[in-house]
Image 1 (cartoon, rainbow, N blue to C red):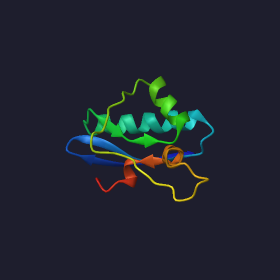
Image 2 (cartoon, rainbow, N blue to C red):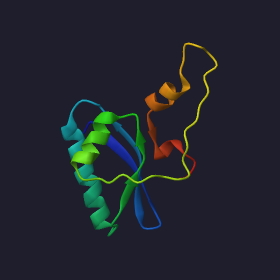
Image 3 (cartoon, rainbow, N blue to C red):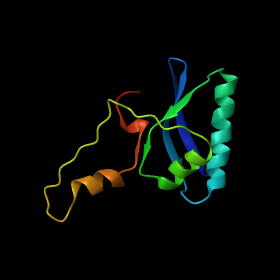
Image 4 (cartoon, rainbow, N blue to C red):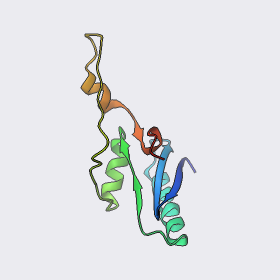
Length: 105
């Protein structure tokens, strides 16, 4: 497998905390997703949640697999660039961010 995830069950929800994959072969994501769904079913968990920012290929994969987007009202990305060659808005949106980057799990 060229993709792996860190998962954590919290209050009956399977949190997909982190994702690493080769960024090239969607089949690896498919295999990983199937295993995660099978795990949730085995544990009788009906909901899987994750955060993802900065991986358009994976985000498109999720849309193609009927995942739903939900806004998180307590997460706000802000930044400030001190150098004139850098745009803080662009930098924030180039970051790869998952739930594992927070202190909420």
